[in-house]
View 1 (cartoon, one colour):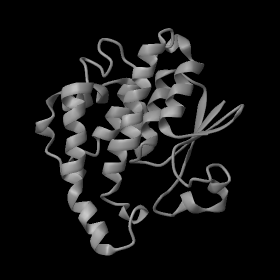
View 2 (cartoon, helix red, strand yellow):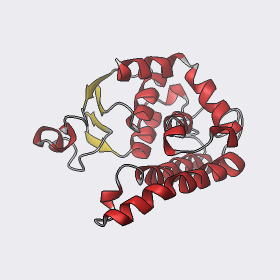
View 3 (cartoon, one colour):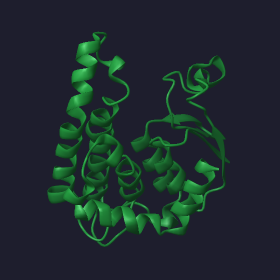
View 4 (cartoon, one colour):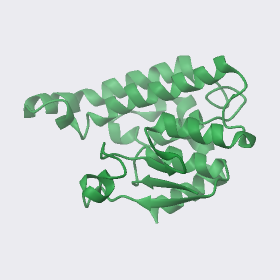
Length: 206
């Protein structure tokens, strides 16, 4: 059985949704950021990075959302969550998820975790002021160049969709006007109607 370590309101929701999509046999362990559990020795023994998600498999522990999503898709091929038979299309899936991880998520994190990049308070505040602009720039690219319809990759639902949905939950909090990105918001709405998404969100918010 797989075990997902997650924290509410974080990117771990994407992995949680994909486990539901795959109808996987899995369990969850909630990590409380409010209680600083991600920095406690018990969790650091699972993930020395002190972040979520982390997933325990029968072969070891995986971290980083793109890796976990790809692992689930490859482990449950009958769920058809990625174009595993086409190396180029699968690379496109990985490219999209890598962009969310390495660029959009970093821009978002400047709002509350500027201390990762600077010690000077003025520099941290400057990063925070930049967030609405830097996050919106990411969504401009997603809206106009990267998001097909009705799903990220076009007609076929993939592991990209739960990841984008998870990130898009934070638009308003990042000070971005969602009306600027109708395709992203329509995607967010349709994702929220999926039973698998509703089950994962309900558990995380319980």
